[in-house]
Image (cartoon, rainbow, N blue to C red; front, top):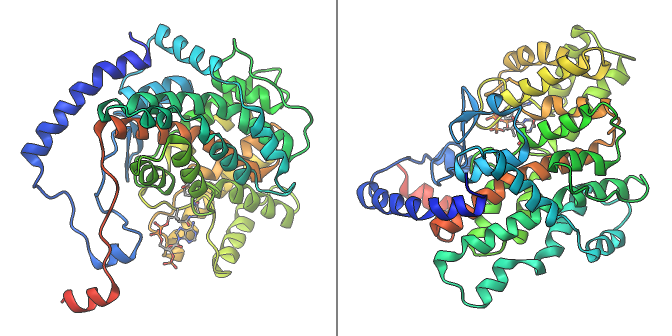
Length: 424
Ligand code: AMX
């Protein structure tokens, strides 16, 4: 099988032809109607963009290029990035080639550390990560090629270069943020003969004699990689990228969205919620105590983090994958046990409460408890881990959109006055 670059070079002309035919034959057909409620309600459910890397079905969860995420949980993140971009899993040679690409591009410019060191010591780790990505914008190969007047049909090639450069550096930057922000001592360098995920685990500096923590990090990176095109981070990255802003601008913008508590920050909030129950009830809480705490949360006008979803209407399979990992490797851990009990109790509470359309857990409900067990206890950091993974999806979408020549995003807004006058 061909390397990622060669594979895409073969696929892209075919894809373009397909799109030309589709646009000609189906261009005038409708795929969605929009209600006033949807226009006021975060555009929920409106089909208004194309994303080929993955699909989220309300009753099945995440499907990557036709493969349910549960069937991919043993795959390594490098394989997932190849799959997101090409629709195929790499063979051994292509997989190794991609791993080598990441290793060769992994060195982080010194100025990144200088900028991060100058930030306030209490900066949020996500603010540090986003700043690091943005400050590397000057490295963009896309910008260099664009300024030289590259043909539009070739935009995807330097965008892929940017994607590979950025992904290769992200584990080092993210681990550096961890060590700097939480006073863990000197940074640990990228080991070129290790895979991308194990490198990240190693550079964090968490002791891992058994290799299970590296397994967890690989799983984490695999499970969070993408969630179709309309979620806040992917959609933001896409919108910014559609102005031909480069990958650094676009991914940094997407990550700023991921940093919100209703999106990626939920994992930090989830573990906080779990630990609060344990503190309140002085140990592993009983189902009844959790029920009481869940009601207190709801009656206090707050959401139960890790539960609910804009699209999903079943237990998120990514949560199930983490639950299975926990049951295999740390079934007796009190925090993990609490997560499992919360799963037994909270859906019924949310059903009874009657507001959330989806009472089931999402990906963020359990991941923190596993990290916590391995000693990664600084939960403001958890969204950074999510980010390293989600960058794969954002970047794969960006490369494909460049290849398809997707135009600048510009939906039409209407005013409340317009609604009053025109909708009867
Ligand atoms: N706890 C309490 N109330 C909830 C709830 C929860 N977990 N999930 C939804 N609701 C409430 C909403 O706040 C909303 O209340 P309102 O009418 O007073 O505004 C009502 O139920 C209807 O919301 P919805 O249509 O079911 O959800 P949504 O599409 O508007 O929002 C989400 C989806 C994820 C933001 C929401 O479920 C939520 O806030 N969950 C908790 C935070 C969380 O886990 N976020 C992570 C999502 C996954 C991710 O991106 N990482």
